[in-house]
Length: 254
Ligand SMILES: [Zn+2]
Image 1 (cartoon, rainbow, N blue to C red):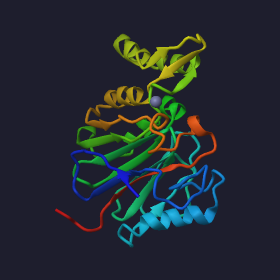
Image 2: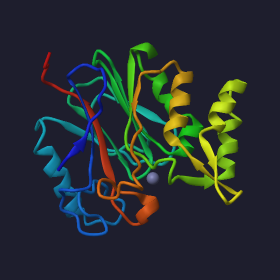
Image 3: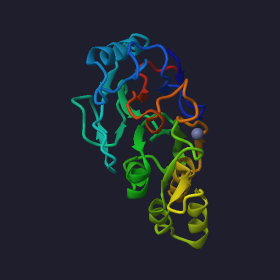
Image 4: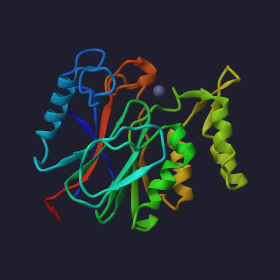
């Protein structure tokens, strides 16, 4: 089992990673480290995968799962409980693990540089358009200049074909002509005039910059291209989900 972790300038006690698909118990088409129970995989295999990961970490961690629905809500939690119907979690409590499941959508990791608060958001184009990043950032007590962001693996602009109405939805949100140009540059024409190739990472960066968040890392994978590493809903249809997770370590390592 191997994970991808951010290279960001936050306190050591912040632990964040995205799992890759190798090293788990699930059978095809979910092979093998699937963390999602809602995609048709055997529940016992998903449980086994979750146990495999937990066994490598602090046994006192408490895991908060989501029922993601492409909405805009980020919920502030102080303790883990039953899955919450939302697309983002924020906590200031050490040992509480914020979990997001993806296979093409963009997981957006937030951390205060001092390690006092963290958030994790599931962002597809609908969530981005509806304001999930704005809502999440508004829930932080820290000022935006004290926040770092990492964009986890999502479907890249090489493979994310959407309808032309998606481009129109974003460009209509521009607050200046420069921003309109920048947002329109996130979409590239295809041979089909009804379609366009969208760059989720670039859209997220523009929205974060508007909020004053310029310390943004990551955004350099394509879940569709990197078939050995990642699940991709667009590539496979019936498939598993990677786990994005972040927590504040209970052991003060500084
Ligand atoms: Zn690609």
